[in-house]
Image (cartoon, rainbow over all chains, first blue to last red; front, top):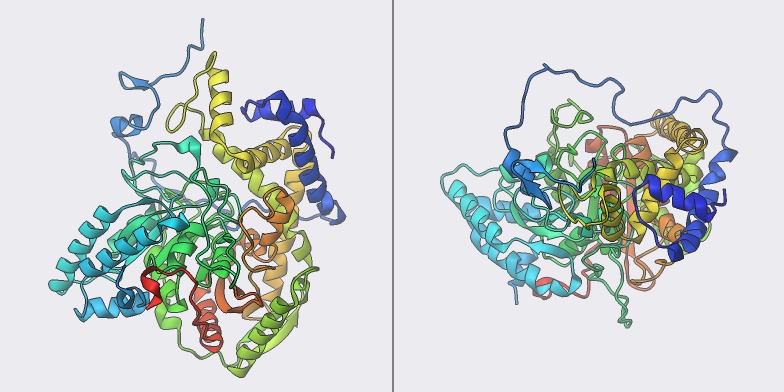
Length: 95
Length: 496
């Protein structure tokens, strides 16, 4: 699959990474190269083969629905680039 | 200069010396703090923690004096900077985690401190563990303490746990911990002439490890000998309720498994690991390894793992897909770097553009693409189906054999800067290591010989899930047959 510049721009928007115009062409080439390399998997007949998401056992363990952690707001906010009055703060979203 | 006689002891020897009070944890920590400073030019450490090391060593000395010694009391180790360590800078080698001081401790490091180990510092790595050279770190490349004789060009230590591998090889730590998503413990162990073990998926908790690809990430030990990594694994392993993929299975005494007796064990030799372009000397070393195990009473068995050639492509769909999801959390809001922009979306985009390096950005974009509407089935689901077939290859092989012997990597260490302009050439480093991550089975790299240009080469043993005991037993026999005693050109204390 050869990716064009608009497609790279679209992926970058989905991934929330700002790209410069000058970066689009080289990235399109690199990503196209990687994707055409991984497309060798099309040689493999996977009819009837179930997908494998993990090597761990398929059933997740259950535990009591109880609070086991928390009460450490200030420790968590301690790493925030911006925080105020016990909250993370972000640029204004709603006008 | 650091005391070379102290630094030349391996972990098992230092442990015995501490228990018999022939040396103190304090003097060991002091010697290693000095060694960490001495190997500074390798750039193996991002954050040395010498004061923490002395405090932990003093506590170990007190316990030893009271006759209450813990299994790893006073043993100085290095920690890949992907493990969260409470109140100590944790970077993942990325600009985007600038200033991050975790308010909690990873399960694996917590277990090591509970066992008495002493923290020397946090080691350098490829950014977010994405790489095979330890050259993509925001904190600059790590140098391998080995160089080709008569050639001054610095070499890569492998990656992504390259700082941990370089530190152990240069005698700046008794052992270290790393993580292995596609070979990131075993390939640097091979490049640096040390032992590196990727345990079974679920054996060691991933809680508190900065996530790259959650279904493939494995914490594991790195050390100078097979016995040393067996001791480390015993302290690191065990079920953890905070990691739902952690396995509720008992932790055996791995050191006790080192009986030296492998008579009658069947060792698989997969024909698919003879890849194009692999140097003849690596194939010859592999053949030598087969003969060593045969001489010790094991039975070599030719096997086939037919899906091997598709493992890399499978990995380079699944790992970026999981990474693109895991790395969504770096948004400039809760921790690390923030670049302000015109509104919230702009802040996200500018923060991530500034914070991620080229390889991380490449993988996040590939991962986003293969998970996006219209491409999910063709790429991601397809790769997951091939993954099933790769795991099935191993399951079928382990009906016939007890372990599998292969090379660890298709080459020795290469020069810093080589392959950096060609992502796929870099990815090919992982051709022999990636299959075990996809299948979740344990694998270990043991230094087995030197290349023609004087660099270490490792052999890899892969075992059945949760049978690290057989894996370690065979590895120790291989280690003593190979009797690899070479040291790199640059060793703290001069190598004793």
